[in-house]
Picture (cartoon, rainbow, N blue to C red):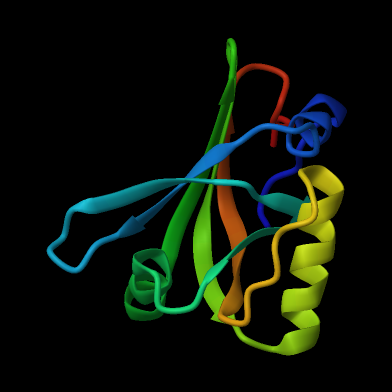
Length: 130
């Protein structure tokens, strides 16, 4: 991670807001979907179903951006993403998700997308000046 979030930025990524996840689709068009995500130890995590379009896009291209908007505040976190099927890592992602949103329904096909942001853009006061 080559940036820091301010205390306001950290609060913004831990308050209950939905976001979008954008990946590159197979035809070169951007694929954007609404997601819940968590921020912990500098990693964005999204839980999802194995085989979904976003999973296939990340496994093919590896680039992703999570964007969150709430009123006048916005934050975009972009970088390299991977899909993990490791049961412990998926369980940790579910635990974090439950803490921010709610306990998700069981899903035997669940995987976790882990995005390590390389760049952050946002409204004033959310990203620390370099």
